[in-house]
Image (cartoon, rainbow, N blue to C red):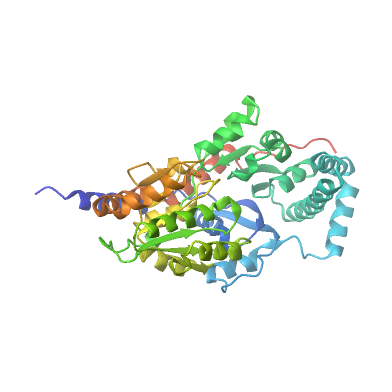
Length: 436
């Protein structure tokens, strides 16, 4: 008897999840981060810990400590907090000592870093003050790394600090650029200069790679590699499929801010309710637009149909996905949202805008529906069509989980990053060292 398609798919997904890892000898990297560990970037914590499992000696260096949060740190987050070096909060004496020692031992390089900061600030008072703060942070971080003998820095959301650091210290630089904010003003962000300074630049999508290429020199394009984000699919169990749910549960996860386009999503829910549809939306997250969005829901007459959940832990979020029938995003700009990956891994079909890297994650009509950004009618129509077609949702639920296992599985994609570190930045190669 032939195996069923479902059985074949399950077997294939198990093989992908259990694929053996290629462990490297213990090799040192400093991960330079803006705020770590934080609820908004849990994928970075998972990436760091997976790299350690592959043999990399990762020292996390965070510019600032995480801000106040609504939940306690998990055990993994507490471990990361305890082992991370924090730059801000080190105290003025540590800054003074680091800068004095650096100027005394490499005055020309120190002044080169200072000049780089001034150029980044374009000599305008406000932007130059911010760039000077980056310079102060870069010297303290670089000084401490030099004392520890760490010569490879991987920068995530801290590329300006990292760029200044390379001007002062003998540091081999790699970086990950996520987008889309880096592409709003690429000249001020100095993409060209950063790519030139780095030995490896990873992007999370081909769209992101195209934008980095657009703003960098063709001679540097060989440095730019696509390494998608990923999640551990084994931690996201399939939700129980509901054919005719009442109410039909929508979930949207993200920061309550302008870029997410949530007023548009609220209007879409109002249109669906006006059609007599029994639908409810759960907004998971918090942010500056929280009160404004709650007021807008009242104005639209759907306050009872929208639940503002606030931030949730990963365990709480898993449960909420399991109780949802559709994940919806209405964003105006995104990278490749991990929240969509999490929903797909749970077997929740998605409706999302056809922007940036999202079409690389969700194939329209296969794992979900893609809509024209800012098109209210298109958004409401896509939600309604999936409400009316349970068989299509069931098919999408299965294919979504397969898509994550095949293309966005954490271990496999971190292995790809590890391979790039080993191939493009071998530890026995000396860092470039401009004259002092």
